[in-house]
Image (cartoon, rainbow, N blue to C red; front, side):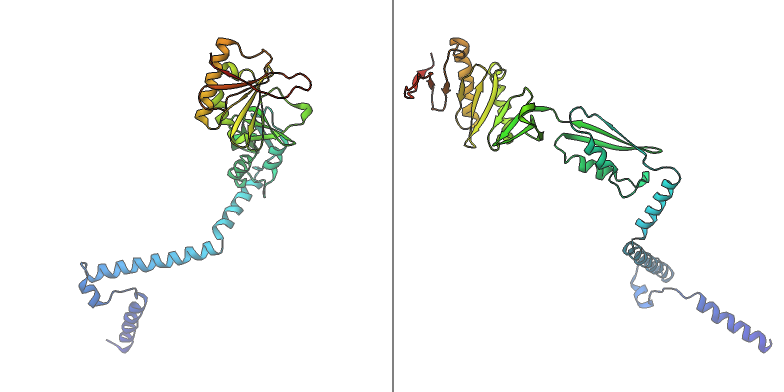
Length: 295
């Protein structure tokens, strides 16, 4: 064999060793593993490769590469003709629709894939009128917004502020005094927060509920009920005590016809079965309540 052949072979073996270099597990450590040396080397190579991929992924995220690629792809779809050109709002009966259109149009881009439909829905739910909302894309160029409105159930007067509220006490909108709808009126600071409890209370006396004109939340602890016949029923504190007193009054009115006889108020705040009534006063007559008991 010539010298030339020897050099080529040596070079080839050296190149082979260099090109085939890879991660290897030390023999002492491999001897302790339940696998052969070759298998251990292969597993170590895979682990090293996964580590390199993880580092690369962290670097891409740090550079915001996936987001940039996604935005570029979304804009490309938009440039192909898929951009928001119209907004279809459904389900609105009472609320002003203009804020809905303005909110939906307030986007960083008009490209359909990039419109933040989740963000639009979350912002819509901040409006008192909106009980629920669904925002969807109708390709190629329309956003569809379905609104579920809250139902006005009462008016709430807090000092000089008059607002519409639903049955749960959620404030819907301001109401000018000249445009008050024919709804029961809740009066007093925090009265709207007790609207559900009041409704549950009135359900125990349906006949009286139908005659309710307003309910005043007194001292942040109890209700005065003002009826269409002009009388006021003064209820005690506490849901249970108020329910007992109102039910008892409803039975008394049904049997004795208390309402519509010119009384001013019926004071049910005393414990037990005692009820105090107040009659109309003549000019200059002092206020002296007349006691009355259940018949």
